[in-house]
Image 1 (cartoon, one colour):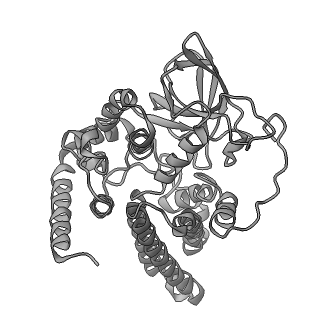
Image 2 (image 1 turned 30 degrees about the vertical axis):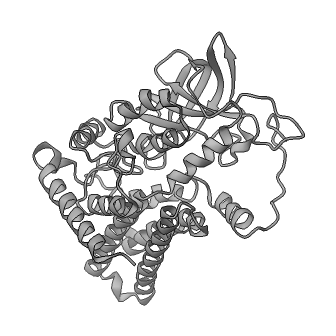
Image 3 (image 1 turned 120 degrees about the vertical axis):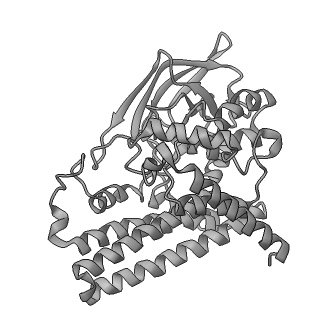
Length: 405
């Protein structure tokens, strides 16, 4: 149980965050409130980048990084407070999440001093943006089946292969790429021989092709590496140690920012409930029941998230961390379906006033279909829970042509 002095300090920190956001989100930045996020990353991207650089100058990026690496050394509680208040202020969606929340902590944990010196500053100051090169056409969530290859040649890594569903690759300066640097051996696990490479995007041999989504936007991409190169020193961990690096990075993916995400979910549910009241949908007992169940589900997500963060603070995420993505993804997809039920027939008509023809509820319904697929599909999450949490036998896996058996 937190001490009274801790609670006082946390209250003071919350007041500080709230006051700074209130002051900062004025002038030109006021117009950015509520912009960006999943399915809407195209909105005011340049302006949101300027906003995040403003945050960096004021010391509000990389809060959880150790002070010796340019962060504020904030604990879990302070990080949660910041993300909650950021969401409550309806501040614009962040553009540097992958660099700040994934790459940075990975380099702090596993990178060399030279890598930290080269890359952490530009991430903290939002001068270089990153994307994550993990998924492939035949290895979406099964990273052990990665077929992108890299070889050392003349003191540089040469990379050939394809990645897919690479978020914001069209805006990124760098990509951390999981590639096979050693041939698979039958006497070793499938994931042996993978390496994590830091690869510049602005070079010959890197081609980015946007993928158009149901919403008509394109924040995901295909990325092709055809003889792309990066320095031999730009490998995280030892050659062949990429699986451990990748698992470390994915562990950071379920971090404190999820608490801010839940504040956004709460805002969506509140607006939907108000819409249901205005249009008379609350007269339908079945819709009333679904809205009530949505509220209950959100409470479950919040409490599970707090339990998960308690485990992270102890240094060992518990099984609740494995269920988090599975639970919130299904809940959010069902919220999109509930929104369409509340809208009724009107939800089938395009919004002529919107640039993309979609109102917020249509966009929610369409994009939330992807929630149960990206960042680890539901099927993969269930396998992780079954095999790594419950200790059940591993699921038989069919061999993929061209991939390690």
